[in-house]
Length: 565
Ligand code: AMP
Image (cartoon, rainbow, N blue to C red; front, side, top):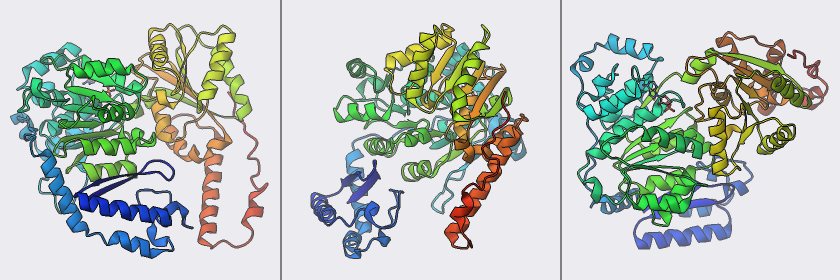
C-alpha cells in the first residue's frame, strides 16, 4: 500500500492511497477514527507547525493514535505500491529517450576547455542535483557551442533553427541539449528570457517523433508542459508554434480560455499539451485528456507554481503520468518545496544553473530607488506620467489588483490611455492588454506580479515599482522587463518603511550594478538587522532588560525619509 499525503490549504489534506482493497479499507477506517478523535491535526497541537509536509506529530499529546499509523509495515507498503505501479504501466512500451550522437569535437574536449566554455556562457553551473550512494551514472555530457554540434543528425531541426535567424545557442541551451537529448532528467535554474523554452522544446520534438508507437495510435499527448499562468502557457505555445517539425501539433489549455474549443482541439489529436495546472486536472478528471502516455514532462517555473498553491495539482499529475518518463523542471529559484518535488519525482536529475539574462539586463537598466511614505506615491507616479515622452513605454507594478483597477479608472477619467493586467481580468482582456502595449497602441501598462513573468516586450523603456515586490527575485525579474534586446532602460522603485526587510538584498543588487543608493536605504537595512538580532536574542532568552519598552520610540529619525527625486 502506498500513501501520498499533500497539504492543500489550511487544514484540508488530499490523500491518494494505492494498494490492495483490504489495505485501502484498513487505512480508510484508521484515518476516519483518527479524524474523529481529532488528534492527528498538527495545527491543533499547541506547537505551531505550518510546514504541512512535515507535521511534527511527536509534539501532539496523544501518542497512541500515532502508534496506530506507525503499525503500518512500510516495507510491505512500498513493495505493494511498486507492484501496483508495475502492473498499471505494464502494457506501455518502453520509452525511448536517448537520441544524442555526440559530435567528436564535443566528446574530445579537455576538462579545461569544458570549464572555459561553461564560464564564458554566463557561468553555467552543472552538477547532479542529489549526490547519493545509489547513483551509478555520474556522467554529465559536455556542453555544445553550435546548433550543428547538437543537431547535426537531425537536419530538419537545423532547418527550423535557421529560420529563426539565431546566431548561436543560448547558455542554457549549450548545456541542456546534450543532457536532454541523452534522455536524462534535468532541472534548469533559469528565468524567462534565457531561451529555456527552446532548450526543452527541441529535444521534445525528437522524443515525440521517435517513440515506438506511431503518433496516430497514441491515445493522448506525448509531451506535457505545465506552466503557472495563462500568459506563460500562451507564450510557450507561441514559441512552440514557431517550429514546424514533421506536423507535430500543440495545444494550450488554461483556465479562462474557451473550454469546449480546447476539448475539441484535444479530441483532434495533439502531441504537445501546454497547460495550467487547474484546467489540466479538470480535463484529465473529466476524461477529455489522457496523460498516461506522456513520456516527456516539463514543469515550467516550478517555484512559481508552488507559490501559487498548485502543489496538489502538480503532485496529482505526477501520479497520473507514467513514472519512467523523462522529467524536466525549470525554476528561477531553488526553495525547499521545489527540492521536495525533485526528490520525489525525478530520477537522478542534473541541475543546470545559468546566470540570469535578467540579471544581465539589470546591468543595462538605470535603477532608481526613492524612499517615500505611502501617501506620497500617487503624486510621484502622476509626475512620472506627465514627464513621459512619446517614445516611452512603461509597466507600473502594484501589489494589489484593486489598486490597478482604481488607477486604471482614474487615468481613463483623465483621458490617459492605459491598459491593465491582473489575475481577475478576463483572459481575452489580458491578451488584449499585452497586444496593445506590444503594438504601442497604449504606452502605459498597469500590472500585478502575475504579469511580470513571461512578458517579453522588447521596447519597454521604464519599469515603475509603485509597490515594491515581496521578494528580491521578483524585483530582478520586474526590472528585467526593460533594458531588453540590447536596449537600455530605467527602473523607478518606491520603497517605504514597510519594505525594510528587503533593504539589505536590494543594496546588494544595486551595488553590484554600480547604481546610486540612497543613504536612507543603508540605515533601513541596519535597523532591520538590529531588529532581527534583538528578536533572536529575545527568542534565545539571552536578552536582559525590557525589550518592548526599548522598541517604542527608540528608532531615532526613522520617520525622516529624505531623498526624493
Ligand atoms: P524564453 O527564455 O524561452 O522565454 O526565450 C526568450 C526569447 O529568446 C524567445 O523569444 C526566443 O525565441 C528567444 N531565443 C531562444 N533561443 C535563442 C537563441 N539561441 N538566440 C537568440 N534568441 C533565442
